[in-house]
Amino acid sequence: MKPIRNSGKAIIIQDEKILLTVNKDDDGLFYLCPGGGQEHSESLRQAVIRECLEEIGEEVEVQDLVCIREYIGRNYIDGDPGMHQVEFFFECNLVSPNPTFEHVSVPDDHQVGVEWVELSRLDEIRFYPSELGVRLKNKDKSKRYLGDIN
Image 1 (cartoon, rainbow, N blue to C red):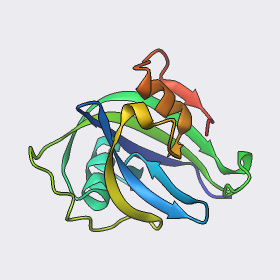
Image 2: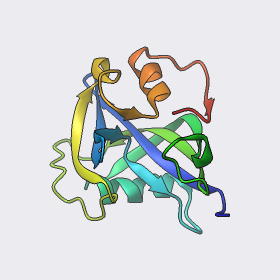
Image 3: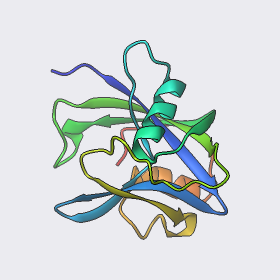
Image 4: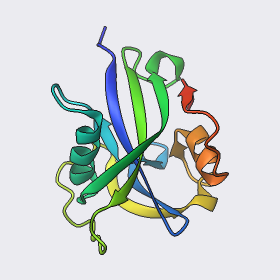
């Protein structure tokens, strides 16, 4: 059994659009907030900054914690049964006023790009976790712990 892993994620919103990584699997495109696994001796904020540099090629300024989600792989049809990840989603701002997203150094395995997506379209695309998309679209900040949701 694998240990529980922490993951720091960035919620970057500008002009009613959210910046997401574009990923591809056998079912087509899916979208995620940039971010990833926390390394030993690294704070969650440091993890978010490092992961954003790797996945979107831009530095971010990490703000407040928006919510926490658990991913328990055995609860999903195609999930990794040994995976248990606690994801911390932080509101972030891009440091550069003119980001290019051209310096992606370590994209995730399925990552094929970076895209600004209108918040109003989050229910039209395959965005994970979908409950976070609903909350962002509706500007709902009522609860911080989302639990194990898809």
